[in-house]
Image (cartoon, rainbow, N blue to C red; front, side):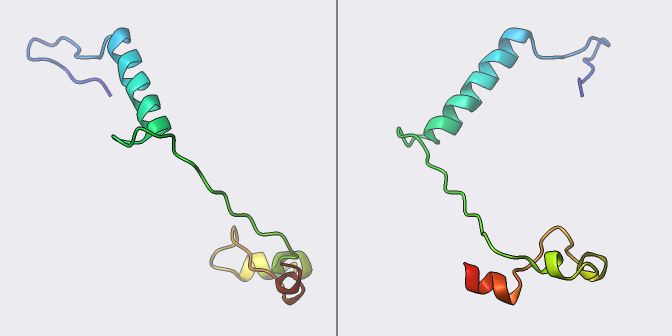
Length: 78
């Protein structure tokens, strides 16, 4: 949200300032702060039968319905 100045003027950043901030953020994301090398990302995914696939009532009973565990069969699959 923009801040109001002492005389009631709006202190919004100029488009050039926003572009410079965005460019600096992208550069830092690519190289990391003072690292000089690109960052690498590791994404870990699990594959296997999930408990919510074999027990339709699991989601309604779970405290974390968005994060189903693997079923016993799924444990063997991974």
